[in-house]
Length: 563
Image 1 (cartoon, rainbow, N blue to C red):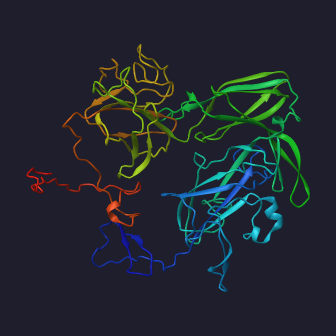
Image 2: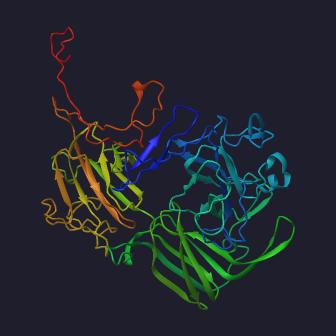
Image 3: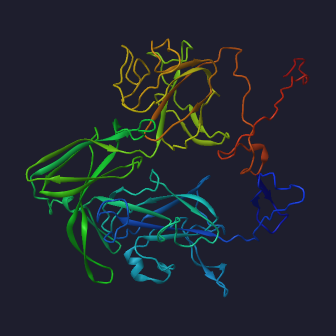
């Protein structure tokens, strides 16, 4: 058990564990709850941005230069934040009291609501341009409340000549371009995750994709050498392949090595562990670094890639994707003179699972999408945790489709939910991913290929056999449930996908959807007037609450009951 304490004033709330054992006397034994005196010290997030080209490998290496001028976007559970705990814009620099504490009455530099990573020009200027003694590519967000934050970094977009620059992010800690930081009160400027040396709380690597060379605030930012026509590779070999997800199976052969769907928006890079490059350091000393990133290119629309003019040698092929849904991948490739190395399907591992489907107008109200039944746009679909709080939410698009492409594998049940404020629920049809080898997607004519039919694999999942035959398809590879279906329990693992189509129809005259809702634990009131308060996404539901409905017996002067 946990006992929590909230002092009357002057101290924070806190808690302590109570042993659930028979030798603990709940009447005579005591426990100690330690509370902290206000004000609670602030926290901070340190950030590193670097040019990930020596080599391309999603981690900072000795030869990688810092990348100045990146803009930080900091968010908490409620969305992006732009103020520190003192109410001033993020980035505000304060004076110090004699005891070293922050003097909020003395502002040395007004913040802009965000910070940028230190540029070479700012490093050389020093002083108030670098108040925290940072290096190029570093930044620190000071004076935050303790908590969990998501950090997004936007690389510099315009060089000193006014020319647009483009980049591809390579680094992520656990998928997606957002990197999380958990910071406590009095958080130090380095983060130690239980082992090894400390480093910044979050770090971001980028490969420059255009233009070939850019002057930017004291730095010269270049693309990898083989991307520059002035420094071509000069060989006659080639490397090609197609990036596809490894479709996971079930234990014990979890990884399976089964060909899944193509990796969308993918990139490949080529490193040479023996290549060397001289780099002029900020102190004017020239250093020589090896293991260089030679080339980076996006895949085509079919996730196929070709690297031409490769000289003989042994290289490291790497791959990633723009939304960073796949783990960064590595493979050693040896190319002989004039050889075309065809790697075939190259497997990528996915951080997440995915849920997709359609909300459609179910004219015959059978819970199954038939040809001619169109999708409904702007219908909200939720994924909830088991306690009722919302994990993810999103609307359907113009044709009624929706997709949650980054569902974390929690190894526990989640609850899917469809909005029912506008339309009557008629049912749903689902396909559950069984894992393993993916059969070819098969449709019964004249059904379009995006609908659930005979073999609803969508060339990305393995339909799990259900207990009963679905009369709409003639087999048991999907399940249709009719009636006011609003929620479904779901288990989802990484490298796997589930599909749910939700049916809707207009209410008939005199018909309504009844009364339903959620009783939630109101831990937060963001509204000044409580009449306008609604449940926040992080507020859990409360189970076993008795809800009573009473008939209105007052005619309100109309002579008609309930009006």
